[in-house]
Picture 1: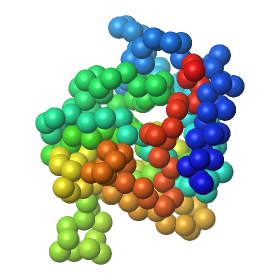
Picture 2: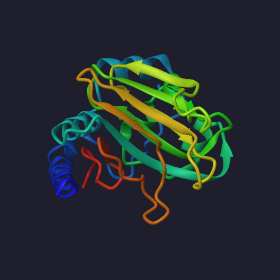
Picture 3: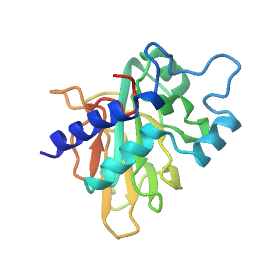
Picture 4: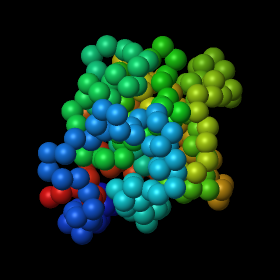
Length: 212
């Protein structure tokens, strides 16, 4: 029921926001010489005015009671640490804001990965952390911190050198005390992120704000 409710709401938003979103055939990646990934202009713009697609997803995830949102963007054949190269090699995304995520919010697992995700905390007052996966021999100890920031801004996470195992842990420290820890990973059966309670997967929904 939750998935159907979210799908219906996103579909309605796609029509209502069509005039504000992408034009058919418009590329996601910025034109050469324009403000794009990693530029100070793109970073300040993302912080001052949230894109409508992201705002719509944040609202829907909040209404569903989720603490984080995730988009699976695609994967590459070989393990790499180059987030920029992976993003450029993938098909154009319907999520316009993804191309403008600055380089200081790109995170790669130690040793690199094959799967690229966009992840954000739903509540701006919560803090999003990414850790290297714990050593199984020391389950009570956190792995190396790879990212940590408050504000709800989306990140790009490149992880998982193979589908057999995960190599990162994403944590949302919620101001209400509700915990959320999960290891982003694709399901071998569906090819989509493994469902996790508290995480809203928008990969399977149409992009709000995109032209129908």
